[in-house]
Image (tube, rainbow, N blue to C red; front, side, top):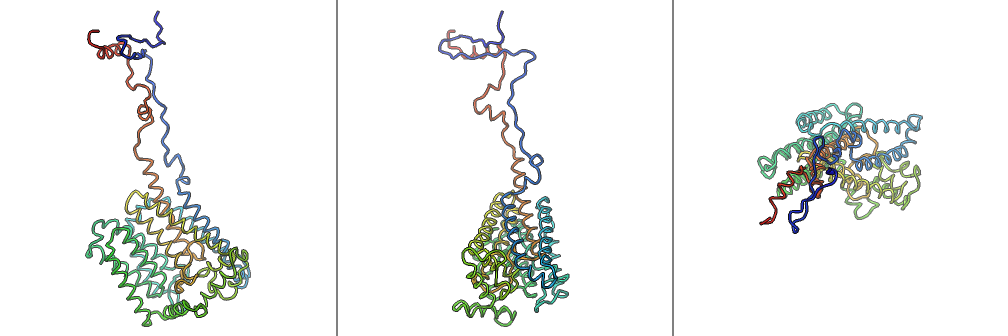
Length: 448
């Protein structure tokens, strides 16, 4: 009786290698490889789909912000409100709202904002006009609405990034055209930046011009055209300021020029900031032990908070903050590079550049590298609209990262079965013994 469990070998030729013949029974099924489930967004969970590295960097900056805002506001809160936690609680509320907005933006597909970019720009221009007419007049400037709770300038920085990403991604080959590229770009940026300069808010206007110019360059603009336009805008701005267009700006530039050769001739804010860094040394005086925040530093919880970090945490603490911003820029550009489309790439890179420019302006002022601008330190300085808008921008970057990851998971890949066959696994053509005999007979040597 034949044993069906043992393979039979047909010796048709001594030089021909023997081939095993597998007998198939009517109830037998072909052996298949176990197919591992492909991970999907649903199985991984929504929270796990967020970019971990970006969350760590933002969380670290917010933790430093909580420490430093409490350190710079507890005395002021106690003197004015009788409770040292008033401003700190308000700051925690702003961060909480910002985090909720960030998660909402991360959940929404970022492509939605491309369709709403024009409407958002029109609304922003409307608020910029409204603040000039009905804004709160503080120190000769109108920059806020609703008792200082809404600053249209912060919104303008954010919206211009979204609109530029949508507009530039739709232009493609027309970017280098003067008629369809350079002139419309100059008009759009000029309208938004000009309305901000009329408040006047030169730091916000400079941020809009710089970020828009870099995005225009990344989209493929002609570098010669961009340099000519940048030189023209800078020259016009200098002429306007020196002729009395903005009185305080002229004084700041003059004190900066004087202080570049003699630090004692610099503005009182720069001198107080430098004194804070000298007092802090390498390791700092200790958390809450700053002296300059009680004496000479103006707005230690907003514009001058980096100087307080240098005094209380030292050069090492200030270097840690700078390292976190560098890590944020690197990760933001990585997200832009992995974006599934040009709009996402320009959006992520524009938001990254926007955050980097704001941080650079604040740090440069506190170290005496450029004249005082009034720019706040992103994610660390006290501020409601600034914190919410910045975290909203981070949410958009997280959305770009999520969509890129989701598209990667949906990309068709070779199945586990095919991969096993390619590695030399079992024969994918199951045969019965008769078929094996006929196949073998076709390959026998002549004469057999």
